[in-house]
Length: 252
Image (tube, rainbow, N blue to C red):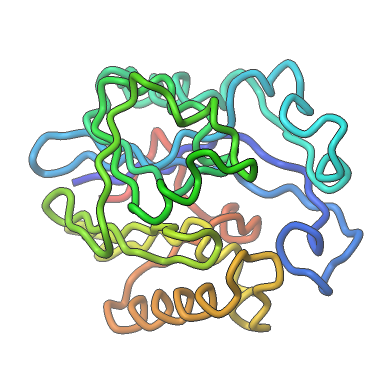
């Protein structure tokens, strides 16, 4: 089994407004936009999230122009950050993806779902039902007739050594992923259940939709990481990002 970490671009953000309210307000930082490919022991290729839509390469404000959020976040995306290009770097095309894990439906995680009509798409039922028809989410990115969603409820193993973890709080029905690698050992992909270590260290969940559920989900992941001696990958942490092995390198 292999785990590839895909570099899908950056966002220039106001740290306090986007990640840690009350800490770093007005400070601009670049945060990574990340996807993952898991090549499972059963021969399937699993993709976790699809990044930001490629239209942002030419137009960084394509999503948020004219909205208040444009003041605190600007996309920084190059042609090589497109999901199709990153897959090509590991000799895969979009049609080689058998399973897409949709962790949630924010624009930086589901931007290119439309490319993956061949894949089975796993999403938590609560997430799917909360997002469809809601003006909090861009329906044209994920609510498309050719996409095949398979809803799950709670923790679910979807391949040998690959388990979805229900981690609501950031949004209803958010999910993280546990991957058990033969050499590296367990790896927990927190996604947006934990943006950065600072969220945990300062108990700062102010930008999460449900702070209590976010706190509980984060504690669960931290406890699981300790119990399993797992590598925990945060959702948007620049410091950790600089240390990670990116595709075409991999963890196994």
